[in-house]
Image (tube, rainbow, N blue to C red; front, side, top):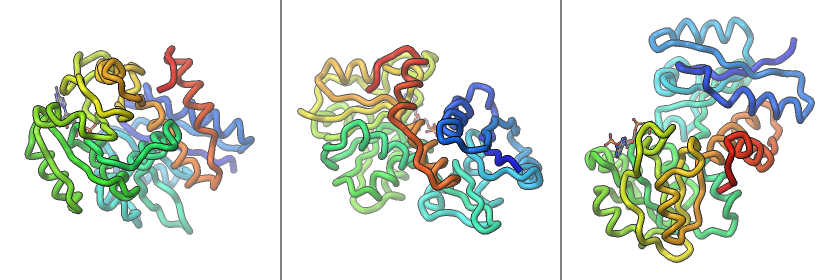
Length: 277
Ligand code: ATR
């Protein structure tokens, strides 16, 4: 039987994952397809059973099911367990196993764009699900220190506590004052996404020499935050690489083959009408 993979979520029609995975499957001449499946909040149990019954070979999980799927799985990978969130389901010897490739996707995209960068002091802006995944993955990769800044500082405190190992928390104002002490800054909030919220979570005026400033948003490709960082002299990275690399990590878990990320980033950049980084 032809294999099929999927992404489940609500909304799902806007997802670029099917185009990306189908392009990789075709490039690699694999007889399989990848489809978007609309599963509403509260309908995950039935949805999960249907995926099993219909013989999906693996699938991605997006909003609003990333946390709700955890108790339905047979096993969960340690990083996904720490996050209590899953974005990839892999079938291993008949068992449904949950992984989370979002954070490692960010790390791989940073490594691909700036292979020589120093694993120095990191500032994470935001303390939601996206920040959590990136924080745990960067910690696992051995970055020197992590500081979490958030509008509601209690959420930053909670994430720093969950990270342990000397992780710090601060307000957005404190982060703004210390901005030029960080080697890598990652903007993980929704501010600037889809042009729906204008502006930046904090202004970027001074950056450390050689610093990398990343935004996980890729629509638009260049947020106001990245524009300000570039003007201040930073090397920048938009969120498209994270999107492509989280997909590539899932694809590799399902097929055992690492797909071509660089050409996919270029292709999606062209479609979105911009330049890479
Ligand atoms: P996700 O899972 O995508 O990270 P989330 O859990 O809703 O989504 O988190 C959104 C993040 O964006 C949070 O850090 C949020 O800050 P609060 O915890 O204070 O709500 C941040 N955020 C959203 N809108 C913001 C704004 N206008 N200014 C600053 N931060 C904002």
